[in-house]
Length: 233
Ligand SMILES: [Zn+2]
Ligand SMILES: [Zn+2]
Image 1 (spheres, rainbow, N blue to C red):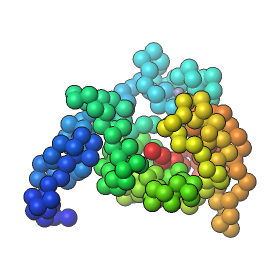
Image 2: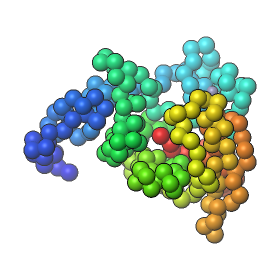
Image 3: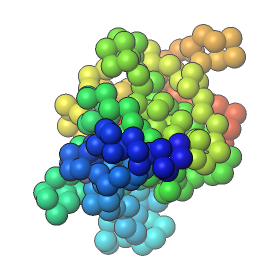
Image 4: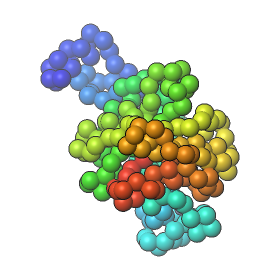
């Protein structure tokens, strides 16, 4: 959309930040204000080479203690931003993710996808695979937020999206309501890879590694592990 038209529309329909609800300047071009965007800081190195958690006491190529004791099924995971409060005390990233998932504010997918694209650290030939929702939750929400994020990221970085490669074989508890250990169990065997005949394979083998469900299901795909990126929110 041309900027002059954006300014005109913003004048007629004033826009507010989707995270903090403060008014946005005319023609701002994003649904997040500058302060909320600035509060979405990238994790500062050194990072665990596996799960990407920032730790002060490890070298740049070391795994964290959790990954040493329970090696994950995935090659590497990286977060686009940390859940940090801003000067107002609000956590803008949490507010934005919850707005997308629970208040159906779909425009947030584009703003968060832009953040992902700016910080995406994986292979330039990666295939983006959004974590699928169970059909019951998809029906209730009306869209899959991971697919919207993957499309926004893929559009900006020129990466293909494979929205039907993974299937969810059963409904699971909402991860947000569970502690870390139960989150792992919650996803065990919940995903399968759709084959060329468009029928899901047997559910992926159970695993107790962190968030391994969808990644474990993809291990037998022909692409290398580093070329498959699983998108979730
Ligand atoms: Zn804001
Ligand atoms: Zn780790």
